[in-house]
Image 1: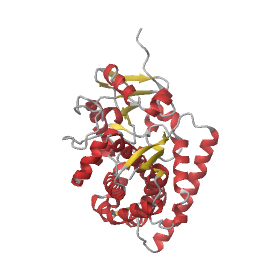
Image 2: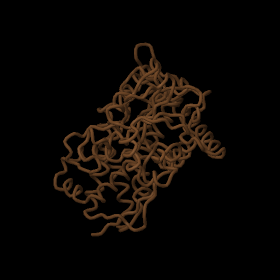
Image 3: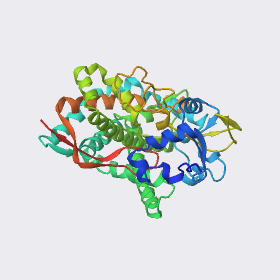
Image 4: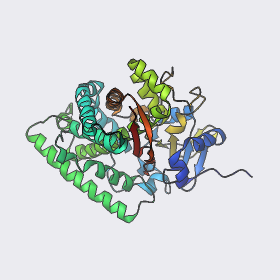
Length: 404
């Protein structure tokens, strides 16, 4: 009798095997059951590249979990009484909000931040100084990610930023885990209220006099006679702070680990720094920080021969799609010279990650600074630890050594 496929918690970093390395598990699912039902979490797992691409690009699928059938995953996860953030909205609301905020997250806006991002990288490395062994996740990745996103929002003082990392983790643990404790949920509510109060004050200040940063950009944003109201800006600020911080932090740790485990690839980059943009894309493909993206069919459908009813929840595995040998030759190889560097780390379709341009600039500048500062790095025997937030993959501890 064939062993049952993993379900529920087994497909999250709350499970030890998954947390350490989900890719062998995903490969088995992809090979044997590319579409199967996880009855513990009320969702269909879809894992092959072409299926994932088709689903995330299909504008006829919903993302608003309130439209799902009773018992589906979003119904377990979300507070159905609250107005969703933009990533969980469908058109026309999603399109309206995205059109109003797109300029603040454009390629041009990201490039304008490149110099400041480089400065932040250098400042953090200066603070580490001559230390020959340190926790990269805590000493560089976490403060880098939060400083960049806070700076973009106009919070340039260290005292403004000191709580943001802790608040991000608390909030994510409260809203992304179906088995969050009452204590975690309560803590998440406190964080949300703190952020609402903080951002409301900043919006009011910007309505009196526009200031530099994303908040000012959103206050000023206008399309025809349409503007963002305060509630919409607050929800967007929370989304930007939480998502922009955690994903950048996690990708930095995942990427450095990949390079240190594959020193020949790091040497290629040192020999040819022009490979950096391709290297960043390969990092995102090889070990992406967001593991899945959800969709809800608005009519009965069939995916790879599997019938799925209207209103059921489909969890497209971005991680599995990025390792599908049908799309990527030798997908388990970390190869910064890979010819085809497309990937699903930023999702797809109308919900393609709004912060993708910023993320690319951040990663390029951060890795450039780290590798310029340290010519010889190794993984320390002090160890590493992955985050335990469902749907996310990243290192909350990653000790490294400067060997020369």
